[in-house]
Amino acid sequence: MTLKEFYSKIGGDYDGVTTRMCGEKLVLKYALKFLDDTTFAALGEALEKGDCDSAFRAAHTVKGVCLNLSFDGLLKSIVPLTEVLRGGSLDVGELYEKAKADYGAVISALKELKESV
Amino acid sequence: MSAKRRILIADDSEMNREILKDMLQDEYDILVAENGEEAIFAIQRYGAEIDLLLLDIVMPKMDGFEVLAHMNKYKWTEDIPVIMISAENSPSAVHKAYEMGVSDYISRPFDETIVHKRVSNTIMLYAKQKRLVNAVTDQIFENEKSSSLMIAILSNIVEFRNGESGLHVLHVRILTKILLQHLLNKTKKYPLSRKDITLISMASALHDIGKISIPDEILNKPGRFTEEEFAIMKNHSAIGGDILKALPFPEEKLIKYAYEICRWHHERYDGRGYPDGLVGEEIPIAAQVVSIADVYDALTSERVYKKAFSHEDAMRMITNGECGSFNPILIDCLKETAEIYRYEINNTVSNSLSNKEDVRNIVYELTQNADLGTSERTLESLEHQLTKEEFFMGLTQDILFEYVYDTDILTLSPYGAKQLKLSENTLHPFADGKQFQLIKESDFEEIKRIISETDVKSPGVTYCCTTVDGKKLSLKLRTIWALGEEDKIVGVIGKVTL
Image (cartoon, rainbow over all chains, first blue to last red; front, side):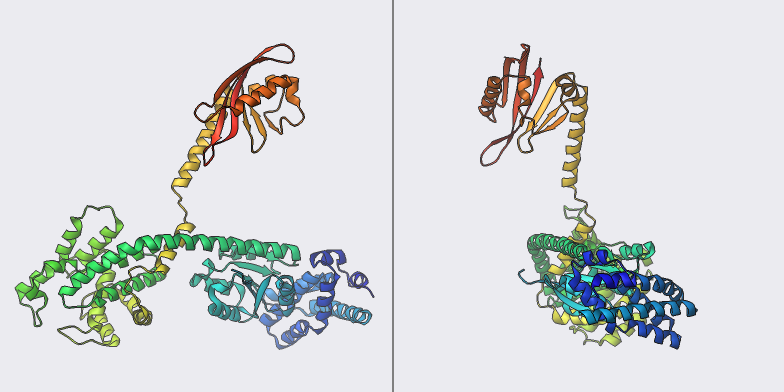
């Protein structure tokens, strides 16, 4: 799987992100690093504990990563989730499930990418 | 500075820190902080060695805005530029950041080229400002040293007669400065600038100058004063004021403050002071502050007629009204700044009356509120000249021209442009030989020759010839000169008559 294929699979702007990061190398490095990133898990934990502030921070952080790395599919579901949490509400059941699904898709695509590197 | 510039990145996401670090670490030394608190610690540790702060908004423990508030409180934003980096793109967040003093706002996603450029631009801008402020500070400081010295000498002379060392004057000056600085942070009631603070502190050295008129036996009497003796002693404030009034510099702020302080530093907030019995805010703030500083130092220092009291005892006596009546805000200021004061008097090595820090603060304030006076007026008058010129050029029914060598631009009056069927401004006017449609090559060469033969004293020449189609043409011109080591022609102005 090439980087370009990865991006078309998860719905991201390959051209945009490689231009911004001046090449594939850094994009690859950070995309694969996302496999080890624990922020999304932290989001889940915070929601379970009912900790709105931490959940918001975690969601916001994930949003930032998606913006930087153009994980547009996950971005689309994380943004509304972030906004609800920002307002102080924990009523995010459906939104979280959607985001979780998109996150899963990104992770499995990343694993595929990792194998071909 | 051959060392790399230093950048502090404050962001709770490791990924973001890594991305930025990757983008910047070739050119810069990178420090990282995971949250607002760590960022503050880093700044406290490295101070102005940090050339730029890249600050995220959303962070645990202390968010970006809280960091900014902290930086503003301690005026760190003057030395360290802040670029906000955030996924927060809402206009309200961006506006708030700018209002709190950030230099720039970079939103995500990060573009390497853009980040690089904006970082280096911001750092360069601040570096230039710092250099300027330092250069001007050095100049002013050198100039001020001798007047500070003069004041120090004068006040020591006065104190000498009392059998006191110059320490009292020094202590009062330091305490006055500290109290004023704290007062300004506490309330907006007293509109003083940093320069005012420096002047008042300087002027405080003269508060007892009237004592020069008090006879020795009274001045140095170890026991209690009789009523008459006390009356004579009380005169020193009025006399000090008179001395200052007699000076030929009535408009100088320093003298005004010195007068207020001298005459009224023994007034009481409750109106039972001397010489004029002023009440409350009738007493100028300068006098109020020096008054309480004077009393505090008298209590906490050893004197011929008493031992030194402790800080706590002194505060108690002042608060209880045992040693005069003061503005409650000032009593609070005194309480709150006790530690700072103790620290400064134990660490002030020299007796110099204005230190570089004070001067630098004044210069910095100047650059912020730049009323640049002379240069602005010059620019203004230049603009007026240009407006006049444009107007008259527009009116004239002559073919007027101006040619500048450096820019190789020929400018014609509107009428002239119409007549010659050229545009008003032409770049590289002689590049393709268009002038030869009007005049012969030999004439053009001749004109160039006579131009080169003009000099500063006789810059004007006239030249007549016939145009290519046989019309009479007369050229009246004047060369414009740049004067320096070698005078040089920079342009030609003139009139063409056909």
